[in-house]
Length: 171
Image (cartoon, rainbow, N blue to C red; front, side, top):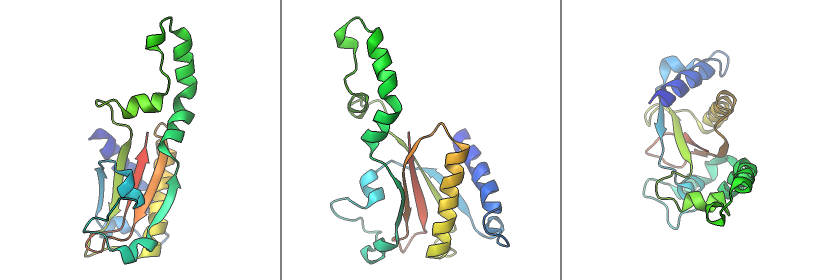
């Protein structure tokens, strides 16, 4: 809850400076929710789309960041795993592949996700305006949270009964 409150304050400050002459903070609602982390949904690669998606609008979606999750894990943790393994005297304590260890651990969440939304279904920004805004949100998120490594950022414009929003996936 504290993380989301802090992010809300930082994003609010960033949005106030977004587009000269337009202060959306006075006129539109904003929400930040912790997502469930479904990469197939975010990338729209699920076997069949959910009922809230209009596939004719899917080409309007934007992918801002798309680094394979296993690649990000290797970039972030391979050196630490090598150092850890060098200190182990018993082979059964060594980690062969940290990514596979984590995805097979039922107690550990592989990655985190936040969903940012500005407006509501009755009061929402246009496609280009929301794309520009969410790019700014992503840039501010990365700048203000260097300890959170973003590997996925997806803007969804194809949910006609909803509002354009961005999924930011990070470790």
